[in-house]
Amino acid sequence: MVWNPQLFNLLLNGLWETIYMVGVSLVIAAGFGLPIGVLLVITGPEHIHPHRVLHTALSTVVNIGRSLPFIILLVAIVPFTRLVVGTSIGTTGAIVPLTVSAIPFFARLVETNLLEVDRGVIEAAQSIGATTWQIIIKVLLLEAKSGLVLSITNTAVSLISYSAMAGAVGGGGLGDLAIRYGYQRFQPDVMLATVIILIILVQGIQSLGDWIARKINHR
Image (cartoon, rainbow, N blue to C red; front, side, top):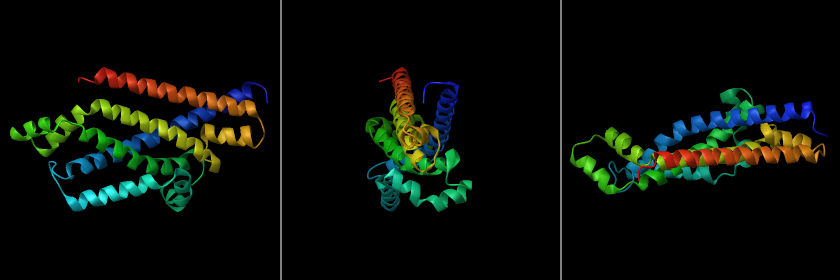
């Protein structure tokens, strides 16, 4: 298949579907993963609200979520996906497993960043009577904002990779395009084009994330 307007439209549509899947999944995953990560930190031993049972339960659930390979998770939660969005195929169907896989991944990244916040700063906030919410928002999240931006960036890059795998089961996007045309129809030019687009997309997101992190890093 030579380069033509039809190929261009296919690639453009595949790129849009990939951005749609990754964007929606990233927003939802961040919305759930951030509070889970915060809870993992503040309920940990010797932190502001230690709670062994809650911490252990959350940590176990997160570890289970991270231990499942995406391609297995994609198939395993098909009934749940259909329950949530009414279908298990296409870009909308891929958003559910993408989100489920990204939540524990992002939660651990959040936990790692927040644990790096200087305990002296936290203790200073406690000594002046700061509430739990004030410590979380004005100390933990504020101090770790640069790292959190990089965590979002890394999650987005991982989601792009996962979205390509979702193409193996009709998930849409560039991965689906590469499999249907590049592999099944033996059109290497389509495969090459999708790979190049994915590389550019990942490099662009990573560079943007690194730039933002440097701009807001006050350390």
